[in-house]
Amino acid sequence: MSTDSREVILGVGAGIAAYKSADLLRRLQDRGYLVTVVPTPSSLNFVGAATWEALSGRPAHTQVWENVHEVAHISLAQKSGYFIIAPATADLIARISVGRADDLLTNLVLASDVPKMIVPAMHPNMWNDPATKLNVETLRSRGFIVLEPDTGRLTGKDSGQGRFPEVSRIVTEFDEMTGNKQDFLGRKILITAGGTREAVDPVRFIGNRSSGKQGIALARSAQLRGAEVSLIAANMDSSSLDGISIINVESARDMQEALQNEFASCDVLIMCAAVADARPTAKLSQKIKKAFFTSIELEANPDLLAELSSQKSHQVMIGFAAETNDHIESARSKLKAKSLDIIYVNDVSGGAIFGKDVTHGTILLRNGEEIALKEVSKDALADLLLDYAIRQLG
Ligand code: C5P
Figure 1 (cartoon, rainbow, N blue to C red):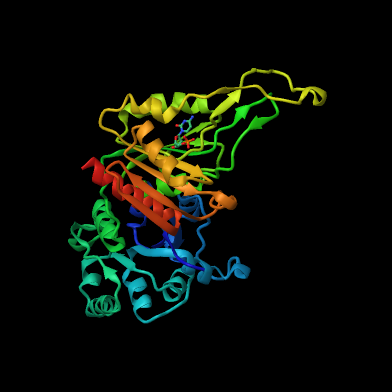
Figure 2: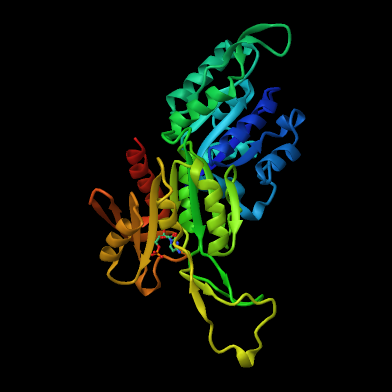
């Protein structure tokens, strides 16, 4: 199993600052991370599993003895791209520094070799104790990023260095560790994804094979890069997306209405959805009986992207195309006809790409540049398109 850079383990130690990690969890989710919380058993005295489960939408286990058949400490360690332990107590730091594995969290630490951040919080006397100092040094020498606690008032009357850092600082340091560019901070990205459905009658529809996977990859990438993301989702599963505004639509005309509401305020529009070119003319409230179901009369749908191009002010416009032949030529003419900045043409000959995690095709830019992509993941294509979009935005 390969690691997923969006999957994060948030380990929670038994300090009063555990309640602040609830906010940290939210801020990580806002950035597009999918977070699994692993509390130490004694930390549940401060914040219970129910809180972590409700906020993360995932189980919050503490022991390797739960769900033994899933070998959770190995599978979770294998899929997670990053680790953050906040708050880390003196005891937890000591256990990790000597390689103990006496609860699920410490098992995971040992089983995973991804970048790890430790956010200590404890009384200044404990932080300054030579044993803790040595343990922190050991962890740093092994590549752990151990944050310096803040200085100030502690839970009791004392003050000194040991406070849990501000969540904003933790998130900034986390971004630095992950190397995530925040180049879309303050920008709004509007993405359409999936495939529209045009009703033939109340039971049947004309649809297409678009799964919405590329749109999800784009939404997550944009979110990880700091953008405010809205996704107009046509007949697809968007349940894996947290912190993204989702507008569900069915037909091209529903999508047109949603786009009209959202377009003016966005900086980048990515029309990834496969929009039906035509719809049945008849609006039927009753199912067509079998004997009469022999042909469907169609009328053209509006070209949503071309329509929006004529309303554009500052927006960068990105289109997608799916072609089985003459890819480049038709992409060149669509780029012009729809006044786009960028178009990506998928080579879908032989049933490729729909529903898959990888794609191949060509990116065409308004300045005439053409970038052929042999086989890339939809995540990688999303990042690449956003690189070109930010270049265009300036
Ligand atoms: O269907 P076509 O190849 O022209 O699609 C190219 C681009 O135009 C895609 O980004 C698609 O979302 C968009 N499109 C649209 N309205 C349509 C058909 C396609 O906005 N009616």
